[in-house]
Image (tube, rainbow over all chains, first blue to last red; front, side, top):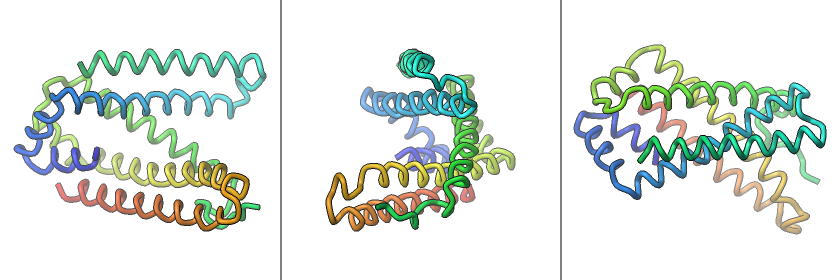
Amino acid sequence: MLLYGLDKSLASEQGFAEVKECLTSPLAKFVVWVLLSGLMYHLTAGIRHLIMDLDIGVTLESGKLGANLVFIISAILIVLMGVWIW
Amino acid sequence: MVTNVTNFSRSGLYDWMAQRVSAVVLAVYSLFLLGYVIANPGMGYAEWHGLFTQSWMRIFSMLSLVALSAHAWIGLWAVTTDYLTPMTLGKWATGVRFLVQALCGIIMFVLFVWGVQILWGI
């Protein structure tokens, strides 16, 4: 779906306008927001994973803190994505 | 027992490393693209098209597409070998897992080739 959008938006000026037009609909905005939300959560949790590979935050205490931080940070990012989209 | 014949590189250590390197590439690429779109509100076709015709952007996009394919394969391999096992599915587990992995592989391959076509077609 995203590739289709990329394909169309790059193929021609008209295609770009169509994609842009399509993205103004509430449903399309919602779909993009859901996809970005998944990406933001995955990204935050992934960065935590890399930090834990460095042996940081691997105790029970700090592990819980890290997990909570991922929830909080990704929630903030997801809200920000929503603000940007709408 | 789950035998190790479908993983990305036949080596857990190499898979581990590939997953992390591709993760960093994908993080940089997605943050860049998102930042670019946010920084250019009301962007027109010329600018969007111009970005993707530059050599560095094509190389960057290709790199990310390769990274995405490897990252997705290693990630889904981990998920399928964790959850599609004899413990959850009984004696058909190996067959089911193989079919799911084959399906994922075909989808990834199609998306990869399509992505190359888009990047090279413009």
